[in-house]
Length: 281
Image (cartoon, rainbow, N blue to C red; front, side, top):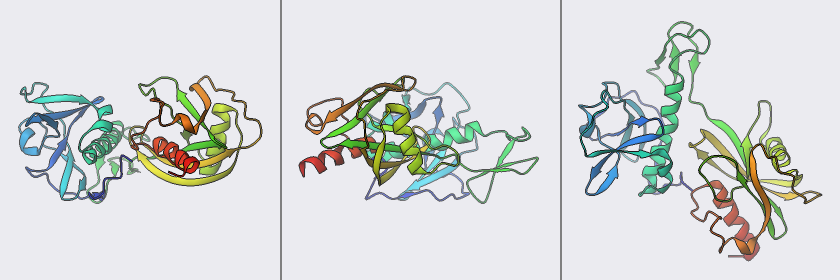
């Protein structure tokens, strides 16, 4: 999956340290990230590449191995031709993959910083904590930590069939699985049952946890489950969110291009695991 970057090691601990010239700088503008062209490739710039173009306030994000990543902000819109802007959605296709993971994780934190510049209680400016990754209100003292939204994804099976969906809106056009955010006061298991029934009208049983994935594209932490159909197999689509839902036979998975076989997402891994259980390979 996208976050599985071994042998590289992701180090999320926060340090209040200054940027150095060989550190990587992530600069986001809307849904785009700044890159620099080197040896025919677009890569994230080092601080040495952008030191004259960014504000003097680069913020430490995390490290991968011994490479430190910082968040930067441009002080000018006009840059040399060697710089480019790439869509954030392309992080899923970035080579090497661990750099794509770094990019989207940085984007998650960038969005949080951008949307929490002011206090939600008293509207005063928020200040960066020097001790931890947190924002502290300059007036009332409230502390805000990065937002991570718990969500569930469920592979519902019926013998040799799996329930696949397509969501309305967005740019993703391949099959996915039932998924949704956990409500306040709700367990992961209850959220899984609710989401499956709300989106497809299917009841489930034998719900079993499989694995999780941080999914920064939606600012969420996904918990993946397998479950079996319980009772009626007729699908009733929630047409507010779902554009398509159907039972797919495992034999369709290798030959149908609508199935994601990259293994980058939790849905791809759940579907591949279902195929393995059906075929033994």
